[in-house]
Amino acid sequence: MEFLTDYGLFLAKTVTFVVAVLVIVTAVVSAAHRKQDGDESDGELHVKRLNEGFKRLKENLHQKLLGDSDRKAWQKARKKQKKAEAKAEKKAAKSGESKEDITRPRVFVLDFNGDIKASDNDQLRKSITAVLSLAEPERDEVVIRLESPGGLVHAYGLAAAQLDRVRAKGIPLTACVDKVAASGGYMMACVADRIVASPFAILGSIGVVAQLPNFHRLLKKNDVDFEILTAGEYKRTLTMFGENTDKGRKKFLEDLEDTHVLFKEYVGERRPAVDIEAVANGDIWFGQRALDVHLIDELKTSDEYLIDACERAEVVSVTFRRKRTLPEKLGLAASGAIEHSFWKLAGMLRHRNLQ
Image 1 (tube, rainbow, N blue to C red):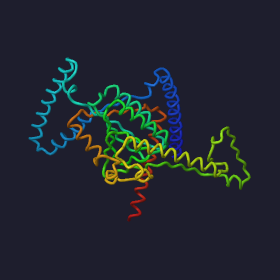
Image 2: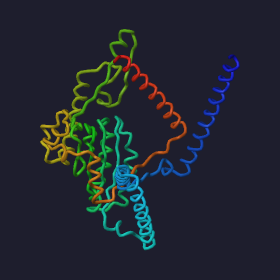
Image 3: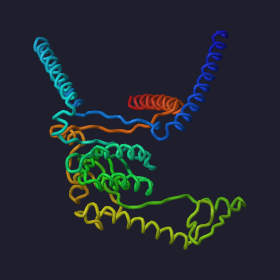
Image 4: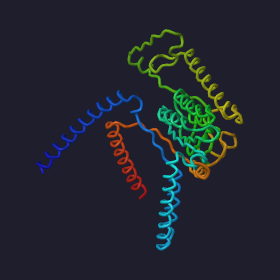
């Protein structure tokens, strides 16, 4: 037993050492590649034809519902059809461009999953840059599948500005919201020519909030002095550790109100049908209610919208994915294992409580 314990400790130390070496080597190599290749080494563009995905789902269900003899006949006919399609595509490739590519419009699908910092900003920027290099005004369309409860003003202002690039090129833009596009998320959504949302998606929250704790009395109680030296009357209005003044609070509130006014003007310019004074009170609306006050244009899930789009266009998902370093991959793996264990334990406790 003692031997097994010692061996286990030795093995753990060896694995730890090897992982540490790999992390260091990968970090050095990644840094060298970034220095040599510049921005292009940060990630790569992933393109997926959604028409094919929906088509495969339909075919899989269809053949599973057939009897054995019918399934074999169907598979044989489908194989023959694929062969003919491949031959036609090969012939079209030799001639330059397929007829289908010329006649059918394209729908480029982008995804944005927002956190408080709008961390998807960089991926969105590069995806839009790629799409705008090919998309044709009045012919093609961009769809943004948007999920965000909002966050930092400047971060979401930049994300909305990225979507404004699409509008500026004259390319129709549709925002699909399945769960939530509130506050900064709605700032992004309102840029679109058309907003489509599921029946219970959360929309709106056109308001501004700021909050911070203040530890001044705690510091004072423990005889701790805290000084802030500034050049400029309003360089600091409210602080976490200093004594806040009525004048500072007044200026801070004025800044919040000004930001709110800018937010309302931004939404009003892009959604002229909206009674901005009625909806810009920080409240939220669920799907149908949002439709009633013109915050959205249609009740429909993103799946419904894209399946319909497949009937009239080539639908392509475009995602720029940043390459993760080995330390990040290891961190994600560890995080995933911890999260899995947590939810498994939570499920066991819940099951026990229900007994």
